[in-house]
Amino acid sequence: MTGRPRSVTDEAIFDAVADVVTESGPAGLTLAAVARRVGLSAPALAQRFGSKRALLVAFATNEAGGVAAVFQAARRAAPDPVRAVRDALVSLAGPIKTPEGLANNLAFLQMDLTDPELRAHSVAQSRALRAEVAALLAEAAEGGDLTSAQPEILADTLYATYCGALVTWAIDGTGPLPEWLAERLDRVLDPYRSPS
Image 1 (cartoon, rainbow, N blue to C red):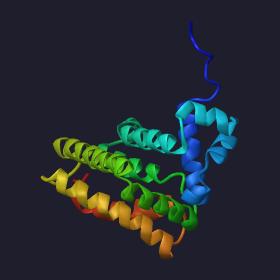
Image 2 (image 1 turned 90 degrees about the vertical axis):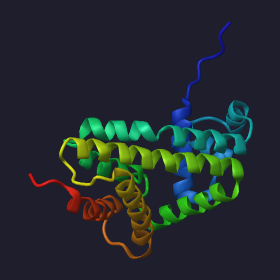
Image 3 (image 1 turned 180 degrees about the vertical axis):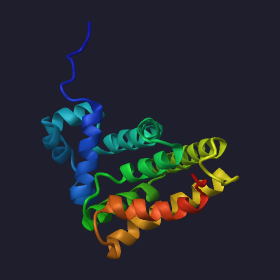
Image 4 (image 1 turned 45 degrees about the horizontal axis):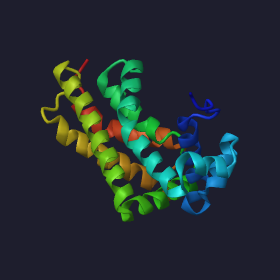
């Protein structure tokens, strides 16, 4: 005997969690707020995940496990692996439209960093992201699109630039975040691009 089909996917629920975090921060992240976004009741959401904490752990697990898919999609769409790296990193910040939204995400990160179980997922996500960047940069070097012989070091530098650019945009950046990020990522990548 099979159960009732779910009317709302876990992915839709995780998207709602990300939206609520961006709009309201950790303080506004309640089962009721997430449930409203996806058309469920808070008790239905609690029954599905068990608790708010269990929902957060499931969300963190999904975020860490979804890094490869972001980079694969960027690689399929981009003309070369260097552009794919930049596009993937820019797309990761896509839901953030305002400095307040970034501040809310940073407040959520603080929660991740102080909770051992959530921190483990943040660490896994960070390492997966750098590994995906390094793999694309290695592909670019092998294909002659990039002159760097050390893709892991360049990947680490690019990741640090990405994180720093997010914060500097929130403090005193101008224009939309995607353009701000792309410009700074290109500043790091351009000196390593092979001449056409």
